[in-house]
Every structure is written in structure tokens, then in C-alpha cells.
Image (cartoon, rainbow, N blue to C red):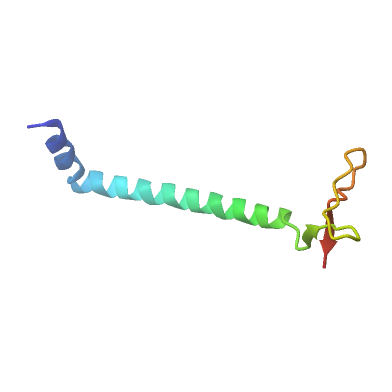
Length: 78
């Protein structure tokens, strides 16, 4: 009997099969709950205001001034 055959027979035992199935479902539920929690946190952080690049009178992009806190390269679009 090879090792793989032994594993196959071992997991075909009804008690082991039930326990492994239950454990797999529990892990799946934990992962799904964690993913949903991360998704809700991410959605809360993302703002609904869209931003677009600022342009000057000639239509060129305005660069950001690193000495200020505000990012002049983008403006909020409502």
C-alpha cells in the first residue's frame, strides 16, 4: 500500500470525512467574514469625491508644491 492510497482510505472514513468537512467550512466562514470586514473598512476610507488634475490657463497640468500640505496638482470635483 502506497502512502497516497493510505491517505485516500483514511479520508474516506466517515468520521474523518465529517470532521475535515466541518473544519473546512469553519475556515471558509472565518475567511469570508474577514474579507467582508476588510471590504467595509476599505469602503469607509474611500471618499466619494472624485479628483481630477488641475490645469492652468494654457491647459497644462499644474505641479504639486511640496512645501505646502495641500496637493495643488489635483482639485476636488463634485
